[in-house]
Image (cartoon, rainbow, N blue to C red; front, side, top):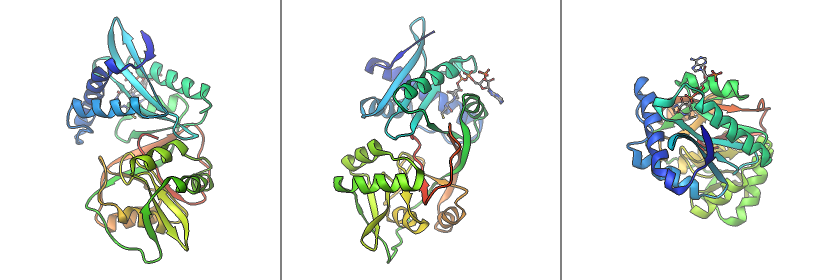
Length: 283
Ligand SMILES: CC(C)(COP(=O)(O)OP(=O)(O)OC[C@H]1O[C@@H](n2cnc3c(N)ncnc32)[C@H](O)[C@@H]1OP(=O)(O)O)[C@@H](O)C(=O)NCCC(=O)NCCS
């Protein structure tokens, strides 16, 4: 088996493998599929391949692509963004080889600490990541529903601009101990980022309210204001840390429903945070 960087000509096959891998496991557990069709998976992978600070590798045997891994250098903490193996080639060590390759690549780029989010019903991914050095550090509730659209009189939410990036990164470092500089810059450029202000200073921000966006705040009021201002929840929904009981209950009380449980896994035990956050699926 050969491991090599993904090229644009591989994306159609990688998208098909990704669609079938997720469809196979979600169907077995009676959950809705992550993607409506292979084209949607292909579109996501094509975006990732062109986005800054993502790298990707395929595992190939005799010219047949068995699976792929996409890793992110967008944050100081490296991210294993997507790892999928053809259902016909699963459980034979291909995922382990690709994961090791992706983790080693990130480490050589200075991202020794790494994170990944796995779906709670998938025992194999949980065990593979645990055996590869990841610790289950946060239970996440993937939630979605109608836009909440409640005003918080003490908070103002507005679209983020380039001049806000420094304050957002400083806040992330204060709350979580690291920043997500490239992710923030990318979201600001694409117009999906928002900040929340209180007493005329930034007390929270988000790169997008949904599956691919994260949020950071000094308090739960900041996160609530950001979530309540969103016009909708992108993809399968937002990833709320279930252990943040106040925020989780507030989402439930405002009509959001739990789609599925997920696990944030980290190669370092996560220490106490100086604030609150929600993570993004692509890390
Ligand atoms: C998750 C996935 C990437 C793993 O790839 P894979 O090639 O099937 O996995 P591997 O064979 O390399 O490794 C699986 C490991 O988990 C272990 N394992 C699997 N199920 C287990 C269980 N129920 N209990 C304990 N260990 C288990 C295997 O023994 C193996 O460990 P080993 O290498 O020490 O023998 C692949 O199954 C997949 O694409 N799944 C669907 C998509 C998905 O969920 N991707 C992950 C996104 S976060």
